[in-house]
Structures are given as structure tokens and as C-alpha cells.
Length: 143
Image 1 (tube, rainbow, N blue to C red):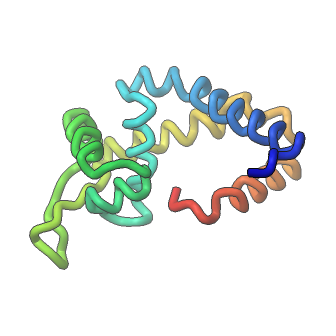
Image 2 (tube, helix red, strand yellow):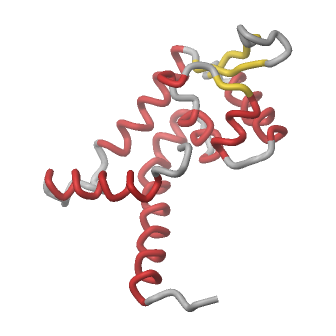
């Protein structure tokens, strides 16, 4: 295997640092909502614009086993952030969707990052450029 370039190493370090900084920026809001990072990831993936998701579909989006989604869904349901229902097309499949409290919690997580100091030192054009670059890096991903 070819050794990654110095630029690739710097990019990997910067990406990991960004990941850690995002988690740090979200921590206070996570604590207020009684969420862990994995629970917030599940909440994020249950985008109301996508409609209800099956356990399997959510597991694919989270890159985990469907049994893990059951655990996450149980915790989110206890907090009244998600509801389970039968799929319209196949009554054997249970789908998950956000409740109004879940939608509000998801919006609080988004606002916590959008209003944080994490990207405030960037100009608007730099923010747009970074957005485009990050979207380009993740366009193959389902997140």
C-alpha cells in the first residue's frame, strides 16, 4: 500500500480535529437533552424530510447493525423523541419517525452548531466554500 502524502496526513488530522470540535460544541446541548453522541446521530438521521425510516434503513445510514438501532430507538422513544409505526406498504416492517419533541431536539442540535464559535472566524465566502468542500467529501455517504 502506498504511503499517503503529507497533505493527506494533514487533512486526516484536520478532519479528526473537526470531528472532536463538533462533539465538544454539541456537548452542552446533548447534556441538556439527555442525549449521547450515538443517540444524537440517530436523531440526526431521522430527518423529517426523508419521512419514516425502517430499522434496517436507519442502521444503514448509521453504519451499524439493526440490533443497535433497536437499542437507540428504545432510548429515543423513552425520551419521547421518536415514535414507532407500521410501514404503509408492508405491515411487518416497523418504521421510526420523529415526534414534535424529537424534531425540536434535532433543531436544537443543528442550532447549537450553527450558532457556535466553531465557524464564526470564517467569512461568509469561506463558510460557503467549506460547505461545498465538505458536501463534496461526503456526497457518496447517506448522511
